[in-house]
Length: 328
Image 1 (cartoon, rainbow, N blue to C red):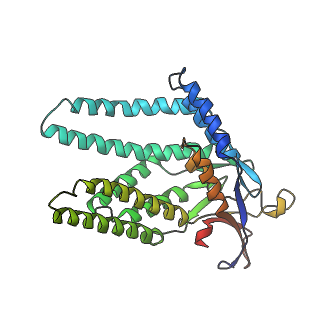
Image 2 (cartoon, rainbow, N blue to C red; image 1 turned 90 degrees about the vertical axis):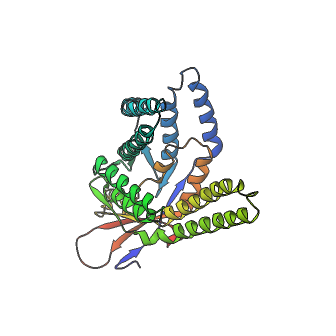
Image 3 (tube, rainbow, N blue to C red; image 1 turned 90 degrees about the horizontal axis):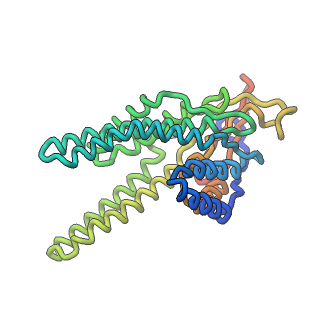
């Protein structure tokens, strides 16, 4: 039981193999040489089709309908937006004095703001070209509002030396998922900063303590060991970051409500108009490594989709919730 609903599991499965994806990528990268890199859009589309079509939920695979030409057009638009920023960086590199510091700060801030906008639009693109059982996902909301939200949170994270990151992460997750739709059904986000604060602050404290200890050893040895501190900080920083992101992905519950499907159109009477979780393969859609196939297969084995059926009287409906198996 989960509150006032009965709980059952629907498995997610990834059937692709690393070897299959590897040889596809090899062929695609070889074709990028004579095309001066333009074939990368076809490689990206092939890769997404591989991830999507090999990911099945309750026995039905996802579909990806994006085309290489759409990616190429999006790249040209992004190039037109970001190229002036790169030109500004080049111009500032020829200057001296305070104008360089101020200029770099302004351009970097503008770049980060536009990056937030671009990432939201990229998620919108992937979702709007993803279907499951013939029904399309969508990312609503406002990309400019998301970029502003991310930018302001980033300033607070910098001011607090990173301590505000769990709050920013939870808020951005909430905005993305509450604006995610499957057909005419809206997702909701049931997590909070408390869900991910523990892993983050543990990683933060561990890195801070070990780096502080390394600095102390460096001073005690009259600076002979100080050269190792930056390397240690980088290694520990990456380790702590990946540990936290793994826990963040496992501890971020999402859900969506949908009407119960008729038995005549649905296998096991669970579908066709209800809502699955956000397609997890979207997170691997930009990866170029064949090892991502193994990562996605592991994620699917460790996860499940739970259709939750109301027990108490009321409007007929079902809720689809996804959580990693580690959180149940």
